[in-house]
Length: 265
Ligand code: GLN
Image (cartoon, rainbow, N blue to C red; front, side, top):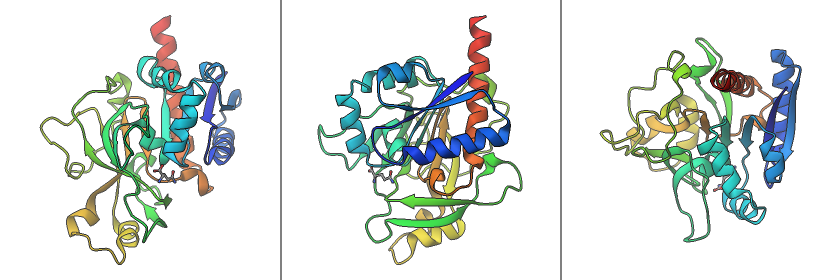
C-alpha cells in the first residue's frame, strides 16, 4: 500500500485528507492510506506529503518545535519523495521568501523560486476565480481557484535546492507559458522549474480589481510550479470540492513510487 501524509501542525489539513480520499476513491486507488503527520515517525511512513495552507511562519515554528524541520528537508531533498505545498505550504517549499521576519521563519526548500507572501495585499486578501490548468489535460474546464492571502512565485532562482527534473516526467512535461516568471533571471534561472499555471483571464482581473498594476503584471503571476517531485500551488484546491488536482497529484505519487521500486530492484 501507498501512504500519503498531510502535515497536520496547523492550517487546512483536514480538508486535504478528505479530498485526497475522495480522489483516491474516484481513481480506484483502493489500498492507499492517508494519515495526518505530526511526528518524524509518522513522516517516515509516507510515500508522499501535502503541506497545507495556513500561516507559514506559525507552521515552521511548530515544525521546528516538533523536531520536524530537518526530517521534512530530508524527505523533500534527500529522499525526494513527492511533496505538494498549497499556499503557506508553497512558501515553505520555496528556497526563498520575502516579507519574512529575520530569524522568524525557516523554510524547508526544494523549489528554486522566490515567493512573495501576501502578494495580493490586504485589499483583495481573498478571491476566487476560474484558472486554466493545462496539466489537467486539453480542454479541461477551468479550476475554481481560491486565493487566501496568497503568495505568488515572483522569480525562478539559479539551481540551489539540488532537485532535478525526474527523467520520467520529461515526456509529460507541459508546455510552459512562453513568458518566464516575472523578474526571473532568464539566463541563470533553473531550467528544471516548470511553470504549471499563471494567473490570467478573469481570475487575474478579479485579483487586480482596484489595484494599480501594470498590464504586464496582470498577465503573468505564476501560481503553480513543479520541480522534480516538488509541486506548489498558490491557491487552495482543498477548499473547493473539485478533486481534479488531488487526483492528478496522486498519479504523480504513484509514478514516483514505481520509479523508486524500479531503482531499488
Ligand atoms: N499568508 C499566509 C502566509 O504567509 C499564507 C496564507 C494561506 O496559506 N492561505 O503564510
